[in-house]
Image 1 (cartoon, rainbow, N blue to C red):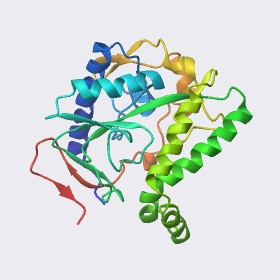
Image 2: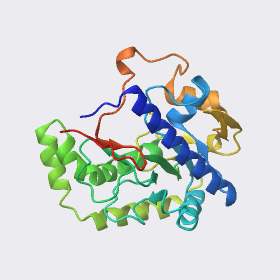
Image 3: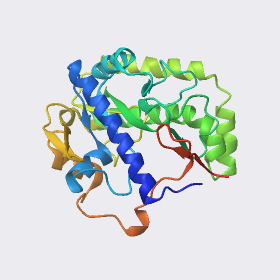
Length: 278
C-alpha cells in the first residue's frame, strides 16, 4: 500500500481540479446541468476547497443530463489530456457511473490493479435516477441496487475482501457473465425513467441513513459555490443536504478518521516518477 504524502496529495487534488474545470467547460458549452456533491460540496462549504485529506472529486446530474454529458465528452475532450469512462464506452468497466480521467497519469486503487482498462487520476461523474416515492418502495429498490452492485464488485471483491468466505462468495458471483449483469443494470435504468418521484439516487452507489435516496430538488437550481477559488454549481439548500448526508457537517471528524485512501500505484500527469507498492 502507498499513502500519499502531503505534497503528492496536493498535486493529486490540483489534477482533479483540472478535471473538474474541464467537466465544467463541457457542461457549460452544452448547457448541461450538474452540481458538485458529497465530500466535494462539504469541502467547498467547510474548507473553501478540498477537504485536506480528501483524494477525489464528485459531481452528479440527472440521468438525461448524464447521457448528454457522456456524448459531449466523446466530441469535446482533448484525447491527449482527458478521457471519459463508463460501462457503455469502456470494455471491462464495472462501475455503474462514469469517471473523467487525466491522460498520462496513474491512480490504481488497492486491489483494482487487475482491472482491464486505463486507470488515470479521475473524478467521479454520478447519474441520478428516480426511485419510488414511498420509503418501502425505495427500500426494495435499495435491495435490488445492492445485489447488482455486489455482482459488479465481485471482480474486485474476490481479491479485496478480508473475509475468506466472502472472497469465495465473490469468486462464485464473478462467474456470472459481465454482459448479463450490465444488461440487467441497463434495464434498471430504463425502468427508472418511467418513475415519477421527488426522490433520486445513484443506483450503483450506497445511500446514507435509511432514506434510500436523496431529494431531487437538491440537484436542480443550486447557486454557484467557490471551490479552490473557482465557482462551480452547488447543490440547492446546501445546509439541508449536508445535514442529511453528514449530520453535524461543520464538526471535523476525529484525527484517526482523517485518512487518505491507500493506492497501489500513482503518478502525476506526464511524470516518469511512478510510485508503486512493491
